[in-house]
Amino acid sequence: MGLKTLTATVVATLLLTAAPAVASPAFVLRDGVSEPVFSYEKAIRETAWVETGQDLDRDGQTDRVAADIIRPAEPTARGQRVPVIMDVSPYFEKVGRGNERQPKTYLPDGTPSQFPLFYDNYFVPRGYAVVLVDVGGTNRSSGCFDDVASGNGVVNWLNGRARAFRTPFGPERVRAEWANGSVGAIGKSQDGATAIGMAASGIEGLKTIVPIAGVSSYYEVHNSHGAYFGWAGGPGFYNERAEKLCRPFEEDNARRAGTDGNFNDYWRGLDYVAKTGKVRASVFASMGFHDLNVNPIQFGPWWEALNSHGVPRKAWLHQAAHVDPFDLDRSLFVKTLHRWFDRWLLGVRNGVETEPAIRIEHTPDRWTDERRWPPATQQRVLWPTENGLGSRPSSGTASVTDDPARGASQWVENPSVTSPDRLVFAGEPLRADTRVAGTATVTVTARSDKPAARIGAVLVDYGPATVRNTKWPALGTKDLTTRSCWGAGTAADTGCFLDTVADLTTVDKRIVATGWADLGHHRSLWRGEPLVPGKAYTMTFRLSSLDHVVPAGHRLALVLGGTDGDMFDPELPALGSRVTFELSGTSLSVPVVGRV
Image (cartoon, rainbow, N blue to C red):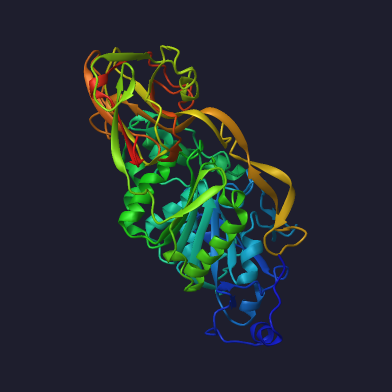
């Protein structure tokens, strides 16, 4: 995409006229959106090392995170200031960003040359700066992993509240006199989690966040209702210096997190859902309901908390896995993101916040706009019976024997065949298409023959369908050989990316929600207790958030098992429990739009 031609008068006024610091804003509108009027090739590229106010690596010096900056040169020459689009990430060196895993690259003198993704190519010519921040201890940053502190430190610097330097350890100060203090944080996965955490801190100057498949509660990453999945250890993307210096920091984190599945003060500090009341920023989020990397439970409760606090918000929801909407509907997503940043960072009254808040994909590449999520639903309670899944409680019991060598993906196979490690309760074929949207819950009344028991629950749609292929490691999209360009570019940073299309497959079933629990936490998430073998305990736990249309003729089923081998660390002790469910005290509550 090249720069659009402006009239000679506008060009002369915009690019040639000297202006004081209080000059008009450094952007030009046409048809309600900011225009690409600044040179990308001549943009200023530099790095500032920003103090976070911490010394996590214990080297006796305040940690500094590297902020690589690209900003249009023309506004600075006129004394005008610009807003910042910021991505805070640990991935810029070893993993890369985006579908093509782009890393940051540098010239021999250290000047940034490639800024991953399209944000710089598209937005710098429109009057934005783009700042890519290395989380503490990664790439060119000192310190250890504290992503929110890393991002907030840079926001503070952009607002004159923190110090930055020209080199990693040198004394030469650098000031952000080119920044107007308005920041938007964007990013996928860990980067999205950082944006959510920054917003939950209530930091001044953060005007909007765009988290893509972001984490809102780190407890749910490592645990579920008292069931401990395993601790992955410290980040695998530390630089060589941090690998050594940050071992005590990471060991302390692991100790405070614990391995007993208890919710504690460590996890409370990383529970951003509980801190939604502090959010000052608007939110434009995206989530895939078949994401096996970041469970959709990270979206549902957080989104409903945003609803309850009246946060200005928008979301793209889809049926793919861990995918950026840039690779789902590229043109419309870029257009929407453009208007969103114009609204919240440039102050353009374009009405984007009053449009339907939800754009949702129900079947591959078929999107609809809706006013809210979840939509209006009714909780429908379904009960396991000897014959399947019914509308009334049933007597009797059913048992599973814990087998951590098998997981949910195997539990759901061959539902009519008896298997000792799982129970399948399938309802009658549905008479009409039925949409289930929100967060379902499962209540179990169960006895274990051992002092501990894990329970896995799976909601399944049995029936033939053509869907996005999200069977691990597939993501639901595939690359083409063609490329499209999104903004201006240089030889080092073209702004051109592989086009993508839906990766489709035909299935006879689809897992639509999953959940796990430790029965010893039936009384409290904060403290588990040993089970009395043979004693019945009742516990309710959530499944992952979902939005799924079950077609007419399909059967909705609840599958119960023990330790889910797809989810739990195989190094964890095998419990070997035999769990017996009392059917009269076991049920599934699903949020239904319409009828079942």
